[in-house]
Figure 1 (tube, rainbow, N blue to C red):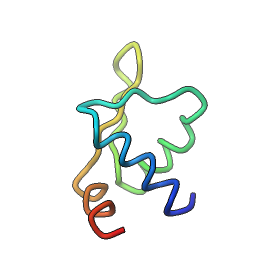
Figure 2: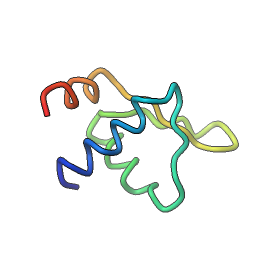
Figure 3: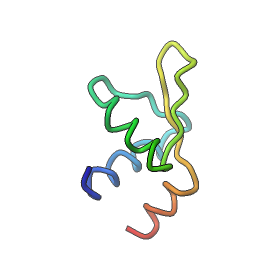
Length: 62
């Protein structure tokens, strides 16, 4: 995943308290979770994600 794509997704997640995972974007969100930039919350009817401190740091330093 390229930095611009990471930045775009992280900005979307950051703007919302809990960002719904958009259909077809599951792989991208899972990759961001593996990188430590977000946390996925699969326990709801609609899986969501929240940004981590590492994700916020990425956005600040991008």
